[in-house]
Length: 628
Image (tube, rainbow, N blue to C red; front, side):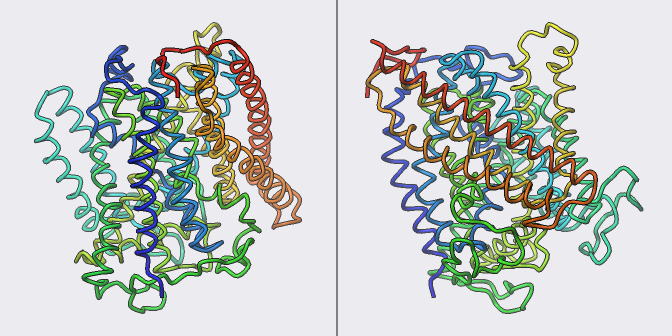
């Protein structure tokens, strides 16, 4: 029987070759030059524009882009269509599409004063195109906040140990920020002290698990769990049939809103840097554990399947191919009808390509880039690193394949497979299962927390950019950082009201991938206006591919799953609650708006590229004069 080592070998081989060859080519292609002053230095303000060490910025960028999607997506895809199409899409699509997308988004933003992709496309196609792309991206950030807040709530509910550890490491991040930027103490010493504290938080979480309200009927918490409230307040809803999840989601959204208005030195930079050590350990440790376990140690004796009690090993226990509609897979009777095309490519969102990364690259990362040459590692390499997380998720699910009868629409698949399967893999390094599984849950929570509050900050940036200089009272409120972050959090919570995870996740995936095609379009427009002789294949071909996939995907979700199912009751059970119906209608409106905005932007962008190529010369826009 084939082992998961083949998944690791495939991904490591393609990614290594791509970084050395294609990554270097792209760096020369956009003429990275350390003699240019980056926006972080040019506009340094101590709030948003703050030059960061390469290691610190990589930690922020990687922590922000690698949310729950590269875990949830590959696990869901492997159980719907089989592990082979999931692995191929990650191994091939990531270096040729996703990493190109991230690198070009970062590079173009650095050349445009650290501004967003909306601003960049506005430079070439006008104010209308800029506002359309910003509205599109703003709607996506709300979906990101909603989806990630829900997944964090599920993680904290299933693993109260991760809740305690997360609270401790966020506190440590505040202290590390003051250590570095207010007290001016040594960076290396601080790294040793606070990273040790972060890993110590894992031990503290295992000793003192934390829940907000008593467990739902039929559920239990680990022994010794601290429950803060005797009963749930009336205003806390049950999400996925758990009031504790609903309580955590409210707390997480409040945290995200507060974190997004703080200066980046106070929480964002130090927290992401510290959490990156957790993430590197989880991802790198998982890959190393597969190699060591395959050739040297084997899996630990305490690694057993939680449902069958059988000893686990590193063989692939799931099918390579379950059919175009997943009709022979374990989830065939548990989820809506899901054709491989286009839904595989939107189910595995961030593991291969993600429009949210363009918002991070051009929203926070570009404002902190110390020198241009750092962009290859952070932009192109950061996306490859996220692909490695997707590979670890695939390895985890293929050795354990937990398929509970109630998958909660798919979200119930990701956590047990990643935490338990990933924990079992870590036992090959001699780590006890009782520590390894909660640690992997904390790794997942760390990815999600950093991505979620970064998304709130990015949504604030975009709304402020849309408003510009406030001229009315309403615009003044919209530009207020405290008001607009509250709006984002409130709308995100409303979208969670239906509890229909499968629709919200697929909607997020489709919108996310559609934004990726628009970000690639923005990069292509930038290159076309740079010079008539710049080749446009590297960004143009992925633009077209992702546009076709995502337009079809969102149409399927809106027509088949939401209208045909939740509203009409033809393809699935219809909604009966008021909040469920209202949420479904809002989601249909969001889909229609996204499709209209995207089609208009594709037309505007194409017309601009035609004009640029027909003119006698391009517009350099401070991008250098080399042609390629």
